[in-house]
Image 1 (cartoon, one colour):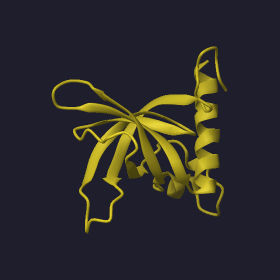
Image 2 (cartoon, helix red, strand yellow):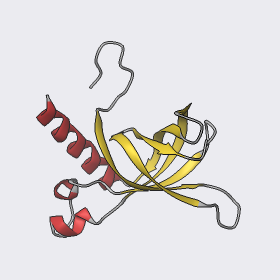
Image 3 (tube, helix red, strand yellow):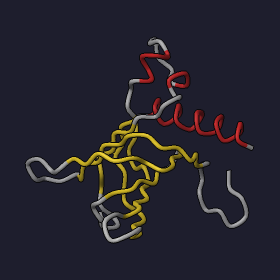
Image 4 (cartoon, one colour):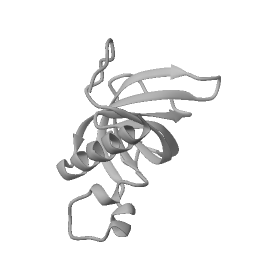
Length: 132
């Protein structure tokens, strides 16, 4: 799980796919942004955003995870599971300016459906083992 000075509890997989991000708020309808994530793991993900969310901000994230359909345990076919988005509440833990227009946002998952979380961890572990 952790190597040397690596503080992460879960492995990270360099992968890019679509992502919908929405700030959790008591406002009527906070804006939803569509972007791509850069990597993901069982504990969180990194994505690029034109919005500089502040540390501690809670976000609703809906991410497509190509390839994880076979790891989801239910009675659906793998092809159907591939269409299932990973939905989570995440807290912003890192914000870094990339250039004048975008930011790298690191988030930690704080609430995630248990079956999806288990499937994500198994998928990332399997894919990173193949890369080693």
